[in-house]
Length: 233
Image 1 (cartoon, rainbow, N blue to C red):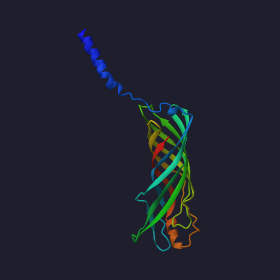
Image 2: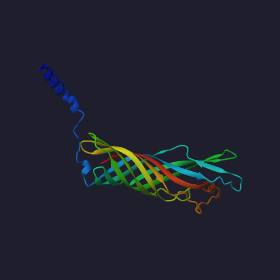
Image 3: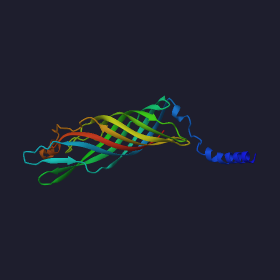
Image 4: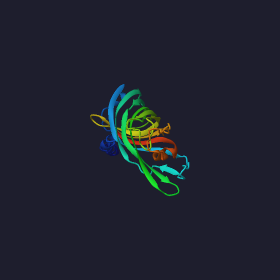
């Protein structure tokens, strides 16, 4: 009898510690709304994958381009979400990404270096599928992926190196929903891979012929972007 009493005392004394593993869930029905909206802010880095053609100019110069450093930019946008099933959502997240890239051009023989700034303010409209895991208390990790189209609102003709206004590509990422008492917060890391060649090769807008060396040194340019956002839904 004493053994049974001791076992019961042990069970009831240990019960609070077991109960702590199961916390009260904030906003338990937030994931089951057919539609919901929100906004997101964050930072990003823009990159260009440059393909050098190695052509030697008539004056004997051969230029090669690279982007060795990255400058952080600012991102802001809105969120539209549609419930598909308990583990999948369809999302559209239009956003504006303010940023620039500094391209370093090096001359092969003289080791001369020139820098060209390429400023781009992209209006991006992604369409993604979000796949979530099971919810654990007030946390729920997820992965996301889809396609996007983008328009460069900061494009200005007459720049030494010019990119096209339209772009498109694929994106994927991961994040984690954090359920707070009044809203849902989700840190999200996303990677964008441009599929289009955005190098503007027709440079009739340049008045200085010497500036054409930057375009002539390249055969292709595609975009890359890494974005860290905080979603409020």
